Length: 241
Ligand SMILES: Nc1nc2c(ncn2[C@@H]2O[C@H](COP(=O)(O)OP(=O)(O)OP(=O)(O)O)[C@@H](O)[C@H]2O)c(=O)[nH]1
Ligand SMILES: [Mg+2]
Image (tube, rainbow, N blue to C red; front, side):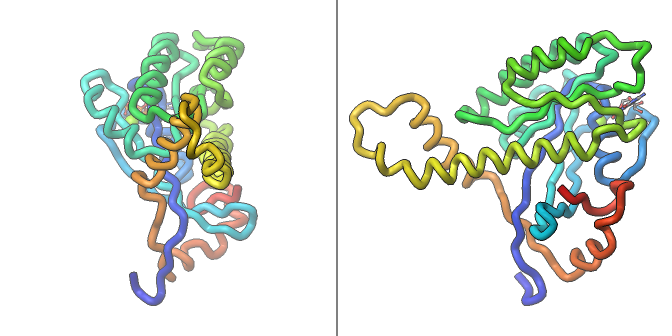
């Protein structure tokens, strides 16, 4: 690390969901502030964006845009392993994409095997109301099944884009705070004979946390990039939480 750089917290966000639901459009709208009209199936693409929390803490968001097509199903474990928080995206115009999210969720639960997993359910393409196949209530029911927030978005009209990614960061931070709390009290349970399942999983969460990279080398160049970004509502540079 050079003398002009320092390590800042990096959050690993992964965008998952079936093909053509708008994962890339959402990610590009969030990172670059523009809408991509063309469907160009992704394999995977990593984006980075500086992010300001609470008006003072600068963090880096690493966003992994993934392939939704069934032919890339074998890559899913790898995507999930690299994430701390997940945006599960369906299109309100596609019931199939909505129904397929259950298997994405189950796979996250299997691969992570954690007590809590930061997830946001994203109902995209809400601008296409006349083509809607999934009602808001159905979305809410699925979100309560997953125990996570539901956010309806439009990548096209830039509706709720920062909110969706911001909710994911908040969910990760909430989980981290819980784990920190757990760590501070965990010794009280250290010597009990039979550990409840919840405690076993919390310990596993703590170990797994260490396996995901959460540091980013922040240089003076990044600092210049940040200047003036705080009044930017176009999403082209940094977002203030
Ligand atoms: N009307 C409308 N179209 C959208 C929206 N989001 C994405 N699209 C369109 O839907 C198509 C698919 O979007 P992508 O972002 O490429 O879909 P994806 O989920 O990344 O697809 P894969 O990479 O194949 O998994 C493109 O033509 C987008 O322009 C939206 O909010 N509203
Ligand atoms: Mg894509």
